[in-house]
Length: 183
Image (cartoon, rainbow, N blue to C red; front, side):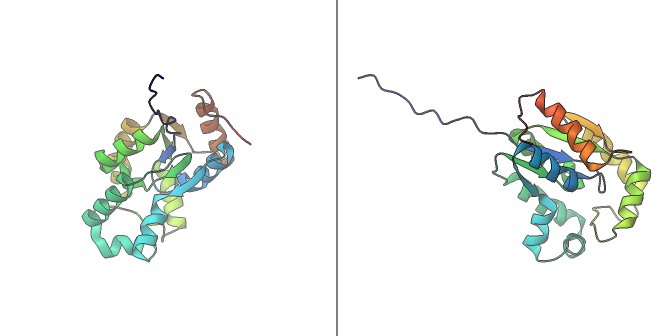
């Protein structure tokens, strides 16, 4: 009798959303997950849970460098499938974290311009923002945008679009790559 080898099924992919604070990653991520029939995971929520405090309080407790190290460790440990992952905006500072996210599946950059980011961050000051001492929001956006674009497989401009329209744009792009919608 011939010997057969076990071949596990291929790993169902995830979809990751990256972008600045206020770009809509969490809200749009939930809608994309619903459209794909996937789960949704927000890495900011995981950090908050790990430190038993709101994200900004965790950042204040850890400081910038330790916060970035904690975020990197958390993202590098993700072992999920069929999940939309909404990340913190600072995830792109870690090449290891970006590599892990790309291993899990396609990475989508939700772009928001400086005016939109500033308005959305001002609307929710407890949002949590990993910004260097003395750095302006404009400098932060200018620093991160090239990192987002380099990490992304697809960029969607969220300015002037509601979350449902952003999710539809992402779902359309994913459909062209073999992801099936359930809704």
